[in-house]
Amino acid sequence: GYLGWAKKWAEQPLRFFMDNVSKVAFPAFSRLQDDKEKLKKSVEKTLFFLCFLTFPVLVGFSTLAPQMVKIIPRYLKWQPAVLALYFYCFNSAWATVSTSMTNLLNAIGHVKKTFKLMIMWLGLTWLIIPILAVKFGYNGVAFGVGIISLSSVVAVIMAKKLVNFALLDSVGKPLFASFALALFLYFLRFWEGGYLIISFKVLSGAIIYLFFSYLLKGRILLKDISLIWHEIKQKN
Image (cartoon, rainbow, N blue to C red; front, side):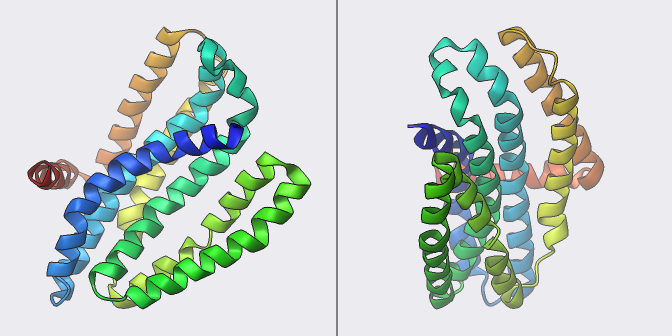
């Protein structure tokens, strides 16, 4: 149905990037748990890398989806699911951070804290989703998922009490660059066309995003990406 389609596409970047990075991050966090400074740097690099890759893809999905469903014949039937896609993309952006936090908590031996988070999310799901589903249908379910994702702040607070990593640098900078990308694509929203126009938007959007990312991080951006990419290739 509509929810399944929206959820599937919104979770694609999360599943692809998170699964690969987690193979490297989990053992690294566990190994470094006695060295707080190295653990802090490892968390910052991992979180930045995930946000750096995931955020722009989610922005791209959200801004280009209305045009994509119009020009791809087999996707035309999914037009009513675009609003739900927005909420699920918002949820996936938060999940990028919260999943990293739960991985960190598990890796350094705080499984009970993760369990408490799971109970909280389950409780919120049972409390919020049914009410919104009855009132607004499938869009209500997606909206509820978006609301629940805001509780990921609790996971961040828990993790930061144990490892005082720089949240602004790790999440804030990719978020700012993604906002610049969203703004750029928003201004191009009336320029509709076929595959060529979409390809141009994707390519020019990628250039804008990389430009702002480099502006915010400098040369260390290339060094960090190269380092983590090398680790992922070794694990695979």
